[in-house]
Length: 318
Image 1 (cartoon, rainbow, N blue to C red):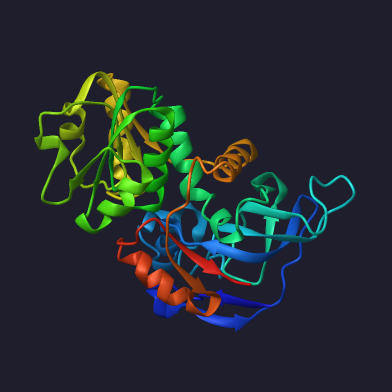
Image 2: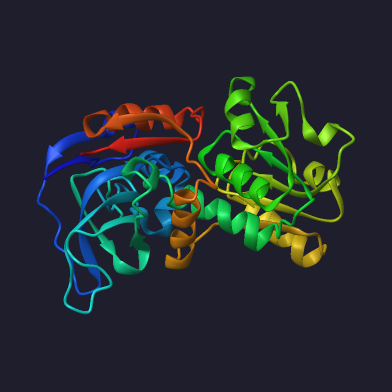
């Protein structure tokens, strides 16, 4: 099969399209023919080997342990482990499949769910990491309720566009902080107020919020906490701004009793199925900046490294 492979840490120039052996599933996994994948910040962090903490966490000290990037996948089952599998050959699925920038990927059954017919493979490929991170942030950490006032920094990102839509769908008033060229897109996603970063800074205004979802990592935690209403919640989402802020969030919550959480989400079948249903009902609509071919993965990863994509970057494989 063809796959985009890297054998050293570095920039997108370290990625090469090569012929490699098709992976073989084990007793708990399935083989998926990849139709589409999408790019996440984790992909280019592993590509670059930064921060060093990632290497210490088991991704490979001197070179990537897994040579093929890509985590999110949408495709068709071509092999199952046995008759007791949750899936059958030919099922259209989406979820996580590590090494998805390839024609085939092995994925754990517990990290996949069936793709609704109403959702395209390209759209389904965006409903993995960024989408379930947003869902868990809004539902499990922010506890957003109808009528609340919510702010989202980095609102134009993959996670941010889903947070805006999910919070708006609950009935919150949403303030989105992003670049001025994202205004039209964020309006269509449901944002009520859009603050142009860096011209505007939500921490310097007089408005206060029931929940702030900090995805950009640009503002100091103290300033964000001061922008909350009494009893408000700050949720630090993803790795922008450095992993140190997750440590700071834990310290502030435990020692100072401040309502701040750091979120590093984990996938569940239930959350993937919920996101698929929301997309099928058009209650969330994946925002796709650009669709690349498998051969264009290096260009997609270089674009992701600039942190300027509107929503998601998709890899259309076949």
